[in-house]
Length: 281
Image (cartoon, helix red, strand yellow):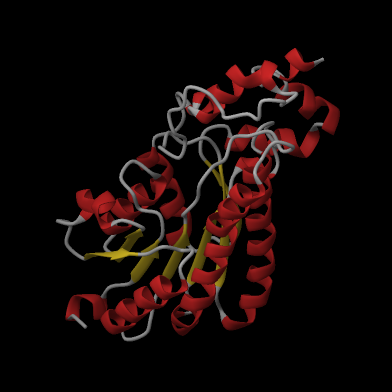
């Protein structure tokens, strides 16, 4: 292990592909003087980070146990078995009506958004416990605001939220903090350009297909917070010792207030505009 890594605090971040939250978090933690282990499924997606000092790039597929174990071995060798911060950021989206979604596609989404996060956390936990460090799980406003056509994304993020709060209680006796980031809208590349959502021929939701495609294309994140600003705020929170839930990103603060005071029927009405649901009745 290098002397630099010995003396610097360290952070490992999943999902650091260019243009995303993970990449911005890696750059921000680097600016704050930490040794950053930036990970993604493909090294080529992190090429923009490779020349930064005190940044180690690792290929890591959160759904592959061997990949996770290999990453732990590298981090252990470089740090002497210690890690100060673990940021579970990897995630993917799936836009499709709940009744039309292929179950295998839904399972793959949960493998990344929930089970991959669980596997990474379990494998790296001894390194975090060794420093009485912090685990950060990136959840979403989708935990509380269940947009139509995103049923399994919403469900996976709700699971992340529940898992994180329970883990926080279970790790508290060991001096480990657990932070759940309820992320508002951030201008990232989690959504992909599509011309249309591949609905089954007999789908009863075809009238809303245009609106579904708009969501898949990221229409709702236009004008949202830049990843760099989001990362700055989250890193400020984490390095200042935050624990429990934090709300960051566009709409996060107002959404928190709305969720607290508004009844369900009002929230449902706020969901309808732009969703295409009005075309189905």
